Length: 359
Image (cartoon, rainbow, N blue to C red):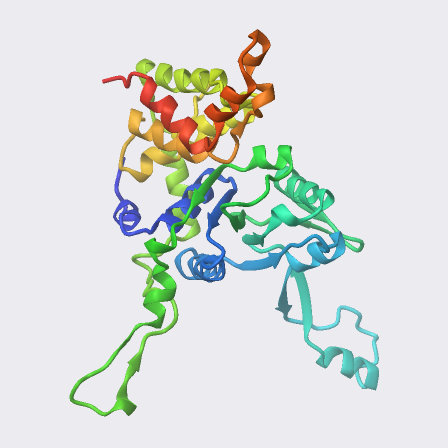
Protein backbone atom coordinates (compact mmCIF):
# COMPACT_ATOMS: atom_id res chain seq x y z
CA UNK A 1 0.00 0.00 0.00
CA UNK A 2 1.20 3.52 -0.69
CA UNK A 3 2.30 5.51 2.30
CA UNK A 4 0.95 9.05 2.05
CA UNK A 5 2.52 10.09 5.33
CA UNK A 6 -0.43 8.78 7.32
CA UNK A 7 1.36 5.76 8.73
CA UNK A 8 4.20 7.88 10.04
CA UNK A 9 1.65 9.97 11.92
CA UNK A 10 0.12 6.83 13.43
CA UNK A 11 3.42 5.93 15.08
CA UNK A 12 3.28 9.08 17.23
CA UNK A 13 -0.24 8.53 18.56
CA UNK A 14 -0.99 7.86 22.21
CA UNK A 15 -3.16 4.92 23.31
CA UNK A 16 -6.31 7.06 23.56
CA UNK A 17 -5.66 8.73 20.20
CA UNK A 18 -5.16 5.34 18.54
CA UNK A 19 -8.38 3.95 20.07
CA UNK A 20 -10.38 6.89 18.72
CA UNK A 21 -8.74 6.60 15.30
CA UNK A 22 -9.58 2.88 15.12
CA UNK A 23 -13.23 3.63 15.83
CA UNK A 24 -13.38 6.40 13.24
CA UNK A 25 -11.81 4.16 10.61
CA UNK A 26 -14.22 1.31 11.42
CA UNK A 27 -17.20 3.67 11.84
CA UNK A 28 -17.88 2.22 15.30
CA UNK A 29 -18.01 3.32 18.96
CA UNK A 30 -16.02 2.63 22.11
CA UNK A 31 -15.83 2.53 25.91
CA UNK A 32 -12.82 4.19 27.56
CA UNK A 33 -12.29 3.57 31.26
CA UNK A 34 -9.94 4.95 33.89
CA UNK A 35 -9.79 5.65 37.61
CA UNK A 36 -12.09 8.10 39.38
CA UNK A 37 -9.25 10.55 40.04
CA UNK A 38 -8.28 10.68 36.36
CA UNK A 39 -11.76 10.86 34.84
CA UNK A 40 -11.88 14.66 34.49
CA UNK A 41 -8.43 14.79 32.91
CA UNK A 42 -9.32 12.01 30.49
CA UNK A 43 -12.46 13.90 29.45
CA UNK A 44 -10.39 17.02 28.69
CA UNK A 45 -7.84 14.88 26.87
CA UNK A 46 -10.47 13.38 24.55
CA UNK A 47 -11.94 16.80 23.81
CA UNK A 48 -8.51 18.13 22.83
CA UNK A 49 -7.88 15.08 20.65
CA UNK A 50 -11.24 15.51 18.90
CA UNK A 51 -10.73 19.17 18.10
CA UNK A 52 -6.96 19.34 17.58
CA UNK A 53 -6.02 15.96 16.11
CA UNK A 54 -9.14 15.21 14.06
CA UNK A 55 -10.66 18.68 13.68
CA UNK A 56 -14.10 17.39 14.66
CA UNK A 57 -16.87 18.93 16.74
CA UNK A 58 -17.36 17.42 20.19
CA UNK A 59 -19.73 17.68 23.13
CA UNK A 60 -19.85 16.15 26.61
CA UNK A 61 -22.84 15.04 28.63
CA UNK A 62 -22.86 13.53 32.10
CA UNK A 63 -25.47 11.00 33.12
CA UNK A 64 -26.87 10.15 36.53
CA UNK A 65 -29.87 8.31 37.88
CA UNK A 66 -31.85 11.57 37.70
CA UNK A 67 -31.07 12.35 34.04
CA UNK A 68 -34.23 12.55 31.93
CA UNK A 69 -34.63 11.74 28.26
CA UNK A 70 -35.38 15.38 27.51
CA UNK A 71 -32.23 16.60 29.26
CA UNK A 72 -30.09 13.94 27.62
CA UNK A 73 -31.37 14.70 24.12
CA UNK A 74 -30.74 18.41 24.52
CA UNK A 75 -27.31 17.96 26.13
CA UNK A 76 -25.83 16.03 23.21
CA UNK A 77 -26.80 18.70 20.67
CA UNK A 78 -24.60 21.64 19.74
CA UNK A 79 -25.67 24.96 18.26
CA UNK A 80 -24.17 26.71 15.27
CA UNK A 81 -24.71 30.38 14.48
CA UNK A 82 -26.03 30.71 10.97
CA UNK A 83 -26.00 33.65 8.57
CA UNK A 84 -29.39 35.17 7.92
CA UNK A 85 -29.82 35.76 4.19
CA UNK A 86 -32.07 38.37 2.67
CA UNK A 87 -35.71 37.81 3.39
CA UNK A 88 -37.24 35.73 0.58
CA UNK A 89 -40.57 37.58 1.00
CA UNK A 90 -40.16 40.77 -1.06
CA UNK A 91 -43.26 42.58 0.22
CA UNK A 92 -42.30 42.51 3.91
CA UNK A 93 -42.05 45.90 5.61
CA UNK A 94 -38.33 46.08 6.37
CA UNK A 95 -38.79 49.31 8.29
CA UNK A 96 -41.01 47.59 10.81
CA UNK A 97 -39.37 47.61 14.28
CA UNK A 98 -40.26 43.98 15.04
CA UNK A 99 -38.73 42.90 11.74
CA UNK A 100 -35.50 44.78 12.48
CA UNK A 101 -35.33 43.28 15.98
CA UNK A 102 -35.81 39.74 14.65
CA UNK A 103 -33.16 40.27 12.00
CA UNK A 104 -30.69 41.61 14.57
CA UNK A 105 -30.95 38.56 16.83
CA UNK A 106 -28.38 35.80 16.16
CA UNK A 107 -29.88 32.78 14.46
CA UNK A 108 -28.75 29.39 15.81
CA UNK A 109 -29.27 25.88 14.48
CA UNK A 110 -28.93 22.71 16.58
CA UNK A 111 -27.25 19.56 15.32
CA UNK A 112 -25.41 16.46 16.49
CA UNK A 113 -21.62 16.81 16.78
CA UNK A 114 -19.10 14.42 15.25
CA UNK A 115 -18.03 13.05 18.64
CA UNK A 116 -20.23 12.63 21.71
CA UNK A 117 -18.60 11.90 25.07
CA UNK A 118 -21.05 10.34 27.55
CA UNK A 119 -19.86 10.16 31.16
CA UNK A 120 -21.26 7.60 33.60
CA UNK A 121 -23.76 6.14 31.15
CA UNK A 122 -23.88 3.05 33.37
CA UNK A 123 -25.68 5.16 35.99
CA UNK A 124 -28.39 6.29 33.57
CA UNK A 125 -31.84 4.73 33.43
CA UNK A 126 -32.75 1.90 31.11
CA UNK A 127 -34.68 4.32 28.87
CA UNK A 128 -31.66 6.55 28.29
CA UNK A 129 -29.38 3.63 27.51
CA UNK A 130 -31.94 2.37 25.00
CA UNK A 131 -32.00 5.87 23.48
CA UNK A 132 -28.24 5.68 23.04
CA UNK A 133 -28.60 2.25 21.44
CA UNK A 134 -31.15 3.63 18.98
CA UNK A 135 -28.81 6.49 18.14
CA UNK A 136 -25.97 4.05 17.37
CA UNK A 137 -28.19 1.68 15.41
CA UNK A 138 -30.32 4.09 13.35
CA UNK A 139 -28.08 7.17 13.25
CA UNK A 140 -30.94 9.41 14.40
CA UNK A 141 -32.29 10.86 17.61
CA UNK A 142 -35.83 12.12 18.14
CA UNK A 143 -36.82 15.09 20.28
CA UNK A 144 -40.22 16.67 20.84
CA UNK A 145 -39.62 19.18 18.06
CA UNK A 146 -37.25 17.63 15.52
CA UNK A 147 -35.30 14.63 14.27
CA UNK A 148 -31.52 14.92 14.17
CA UNK A 149 -29.29 12.73 12.02
CA UNK A 150 -25.66 11.93 12.76
CA UNK A 151 -22.92 13.60 10.71
CA UNK A 152 -20.02 11.80 9.05
CA UNK A 153 -17.78 10.78 10.66
CA UNK A 154 -19.56 10.03 13.93
CA UNK A 155 -18.24 8.51 17.15
CA UNK A 156 -19.74 7.94 20.59
CA UNK A 157 -17.26 7.59 23.45
CA UNK A 158 -18.63 6.14 26.70
CA UNK A 159 -16.35 7.44 29.44
CA UNK A 160 -16.63 5.61 32.73
CA UNK A 161 -14.85 4.03 35.66
CA UNK A 162 -13.21 0.63 35.46
CA UNK A 163 -15.47 -0.51 38.31
CA UNK A 164 -18.65 0.59 36.56
CA UNK A 165 -21.89 -1.36 36.57
CA UNK A 166 -22.64 -3.17 33.29
CA UNK A 167 -24.55 -1.40 30.55
CA UNK A 168 -27.82 -2.70 29.15
CA UNK A 169 -26.99 -5.99 27.44
CA UNK A 170 -27.79 -5.01 23.86
CA UNK A 171 -26.07 -1.61 24.17
CA UNK A 172 -22.97 -3.19 25.68
CA UNK A 173 -22.85 -5.70 22.83
CA UNK A 174 -23.14 -2.91 20.27
CA UNK A 175 -19.96 -1.17 21.48
CA UNK A 176 -17.05 -1.93 19.18
CA UNK A 177 -14.13 -1.97 21.62
CA UNK A 178 -13.14 -1.03 25.15
CA UNK A 179 -9.90 0.47 26.38
CA UNK A 180 -8.53 1.15 29.85
CA UNK A 181 -6.29 4.20 30.14
CA UNK A 182 -3.85 3.97 33.00
CA UNK A 183 -3.31 7.42 34.55
CA UNK A 184 0.40 6.59 34.83
CA UNK A 185 0.53 6.68 31.02
CA UNK A 186 -0.17 10.39 31.27
CA UNK A 187 -2.32 12.82 29.30
CA UNK A 188 -0.17 14.05 26.46
CA UNK A 189 -2.42 16.86 25.27
CA UNK A 190 -3.07 18.32 28.70
CA UNK A 191 0.50 17.92 29.93
CA UNK A 192 2.08 19.40 26.84
CA UNK A 193 -0.48 22.18 26.90
CA UNK A 194 0.50 23.15 30.43
CA UNK A 195 4.25 23.12 29.84
CA UNK A 196 6.11 26.37 29.62
CA UNK A 197 9.63 27.38 28.78
CA UNK A 198 11.71 30.19 30.13
CA UNK A 199 14.83 31.85 28.84
CA UNK A 200 17.33 32.16 31.68
CA UNK A 201 18.59 35.46 30.30
CA UNK A 202 15.26 37.27 30.34
CA UNK A 203 13.00 38.38 33.11
CA UNK A 204 10.00 36.45 34.40
CA UNK A 205 7.75 38.76 32.43
CA UNK A 206 9.03 37.24 29.19
CA UNK A 207 8.06 33.67 30.00
CA UNK A 208 6.62 31.95 26.92
CA UNK A 209 3.62 29.72 27.54
CA UNK A 210 2.53 27.03 25.13
CA UNK A 211 -1.03 27.03 23.88
CA UNK A 212 -3.29 24.39 25.34
CA UNK A 213 -3.04 21.06 23.56
CA UNK A 214 -0.31 19.31 21.63
CA UNK A 215 1.36 21.15 18.80
CA UNK A 216 -0.68 19.65 15.98
CA UNK A 217 -0.32 20.89 12.43
CA UNK A 218 -1.45 19.77 9.00
CA UNK A 219 1.42 17.26 8.88
CA UNK A 220 0.48 15.52 12.16
CA UNK A 221 -3.32 15.78 12.31
CA UNK A 222 -5.87 13.52 10.62
CA UNK A 223 -8.58 14.93 8.40
CA UNK A 224 -11.60 13.17 6.93
CA UNK A 225 -9.66 12.27 3.78
CA UNK A 226 -7.02 10.48 5.88
CA UNK A 227 -9.67 8.46 7.71
CA UNK A 228 -11.36 7.52 4.44
CA UNK A 229 -8.01 6.48 2.96
CA UNK A 230 -7.30 4.21 5.95
CA UNK A 231 -10.75 2.69 5.49
CA UNK A 232 -9.99 2.11 1.82
CA UNK A 233 -6.72 0.38 2.69
CA UNK A 234 -8.48 -1.78 5.26
CA UNK A 235 -10.82 -3.16 2.61
CA UNK A 236 -7.85 -4.61 0.69
CA UNK A 237 -6.33 -6.57 3.60
CA UNK A 238 -5.95 -10.31 3.21
CA UNK A 239 -6.12 -13.15 5.70
CA UNK A 240 -4.61 -16.60 5.33
CA UNK A 241 -6.42 -19.85 6.05
CA UNK A 242 -4.21 -20.52 9.07
CA UNK A 243 -4.91 -17.11 10.65
CA UNK A 244 -8.62 -17.47 9.89
CA UNK A 245 -8.62 -20.82 11.69
CA UNK A 246 -6.73 -19.24 14.59
CA UNK A 247 -9.39 -16.55 14.84
CA UNK A 248 -12.19 -19.11 15.00
CA UNK A 249 -10.27 -21.21 17.53
CA UNK A 250 -10.26 -18.19 19.84
CA UNK A 251 -14.02 -17.81 19.39
CA UNK A 252 -14.61 -21.49 20.15
CA UNK A 253 -12.41 -21.50 23.25
CA UNK A 254 -14.07 -18.36 24.60
CA UNK A 255 -17.54 -19.82 24.11
CA UNK A 256 -16.59 -23.04 25.88
CA UNK A 257 -14.63 -21.50 28.76
CA UNK A 258 -16.17 -22.58 32.06
CA UNK A 259 -16.02 -19.08 33.54
CA UNK A 260 -17.92 -17.41 30.69
CA UNK A 261 -21.64 -16.89 31.12
CA UNK A 262 -23.93 -16.92 28.07
CA UNK A 263 -21.07 -17.55 25.64
CA UNK A 264 -20.09 -15.02 22.97
CA UNK A 265 -22.67 -13.17 20.90
CA UNK A 266 -22.69 -13.11 17.08
CA UNK A 267 -22.27 -9.32 17.10
CA UNK A 268 -19.14 -9.69 19.22
CA UNK A 269 -17.77 -12.08 16.60
CA UNK A 270 -18.65 -9.59 13.89
CA UNK A 271 -16.74 -6.84 15.69
CA UNK A 272 -13.82 -9.19 16.34
CA UNK A 273 -13.39 -9.86 12.65
CA UNK A 274 -14.04 -6.21 11.87
CA UNK A 275 -11.20 -5.04 14.08
CA UNK A 276 -8.68 -7.67 13.00
CA UNK A 277 -9.80 -8.06 9.41
CA UNK A 278 -13.36 -8.50 8.19
CA UNK A 279 -14.02 -11.41 5.89
CA UNK A 280 -15.26 -10.08 2.56
CA UNK A 281 -17.94 -12.72 2.20
CA UNK A 282 -19.35 -12.10 5.68
CA UNK A 283 -19.40 -8.35 6.20
CA UNK A 284 -17.71 -6.47 3.32
CA UNK A 285 -16.74 -3.70 5.74
CA UNK A 286 -13.36 -2.68 7.08
CA UNK A 287 -10.19 -4.28 8.37
CA UNK A 288 -9.00 -1.76 10.87
CA UNK A 289 -5.77 -2.81 12.56
CA UNK A 290 -3.66 -4.03 9.65
CA UNK A 291 -3.32 -0.76 7.69
CA UNK A 292 -2.34 1.11 10.86
CA UNK A 293 0.66 -1.25 11.09
CA UNK A 294 1.61 -0.76 7.43
CA UNK A 295 0.35 -4.26 6.55
CA UNK A 296 -2.00 -5.49 3.87
CA UNK A 297 -2.50 -8.83 5.63
CA UNK A 298 -3.54 -9.93 9.12
CA UNK A 299 -1.05 -11.46 11.53
CA UNK A 300 -1.77 -13.58 14.64
CA UNK A 301 -0.59 -10.71 16.87
CA UNK A 302 -3.25 -8.44 15.36
CA UNK A 303 -5.87 -11.11 16.06
CA UNK A 304 -4.73 -11.27 19.69
CA UNK A 305 -4.87 -7.50 20.00
CA UNK A 306 -8.37 -7.45 18.54
CA UNK A 307 -9.55 -10.15 20.97
CA UNK A 308 -8.36 -8.14 23.97
CA UNK A 309 -10.14 -4.98 22.80
CA UNK A 310 -13.39 -6.50 21.57
CA UNK A 311 -14.22 -9.06 24.27
CA UNK A 312 -13.04 -7.39 27.47
CA UNK A 313 -16.30 -5.50 28.07
CA UNK A 314 -18.52 -8.24 26.66
CA UNK A 315 -17.52 -11.33 28.63
CA UNK A 316 -19.63 -11.86 31.73
CA UNK A 317 -18.27 -14.13 34.47
CA UNK A 318 -20.68 -16.91 35.39
CA UNK A 319 -22.15 -17.13 38.88
CA UNK A 320 -20.79 -20.13 40.85
CA UNK A 321 -24.22 -21.77 41.10
CA UNK A 322 -24.64 -21.53 37.30
CA UNK A 323 -21.23 -22.97 36.37
CA UNK A 324 -21.81 -25.95 34.10
CA UNK A 325 -20.03 -28.52 36.25
CA UNK A 326 -22.62 -27.92 38.98
CA UNK A 327 -24.98 -30.00 36.85
CA UNK A 328 -22.73 -33.00 37.48
CA UNK A 329 -22.40 -32.65 41.23
CA UNK A 330 -19.50 -30.26 41.71
CA UNK A 331 -19.08 -28.65 45.09
CA UNK A 332 -20.43 -25.09 45.22
CA UNK A 333 -17.73 -23.92 47.65
CA UNK A 334 -14.98 -25.29 45.40
CA UNK A 335 -16.46 -23.60 42.33
CA UNK A 336 -16.83 -20.32 44.22
CA UNK A 337 -13.18 -20.48 45.20
CA UNK A 338 -12.18 -21.29 41.61
CA UNK A 339 -14.07 -18.32 40.16
CA UNK A 340 -13.08 -15.82 42.83
CA UNK A 341 -11.19 -12.90 41.38
CA UNK A 342 -11.52 -14.01 37.76
CA UNK A 343 -12.05 -11.15 35.30
CA UNK A 344 -12.83 -11.01 31.60
CA UNK A 345 -9.24 -10.01 30.87
CA UNK A 346 -7.92 -13.08 32.68
CA UNK A 347 -10.24 -15.31 30.65
CA UNK A 348 -9.01 -13.81 27.37
CA UNK A 349 -5.35 -14.22 28.34
CA UNK A 350 -5.94 -17.83 29.40
CA UNK A 351 -7.58 -18.60 26.07
CA UNK A 352 -4.80 -16.94 24.07
CA UNK A 353 -2.16 -18.90 25.99
CA UNK A 354 -3.92 -22.22 25.42
CA UNK A 355 -4.16 -21.95 21.61
CA UNK A 356 -1.22 -22.70 19.34
CA UNK A 357 -0.25 -19.64 17.33
CA UNK A 358 0.14 -20.28 13.58
CA UNK A 359 3.60 -19.64 12.14
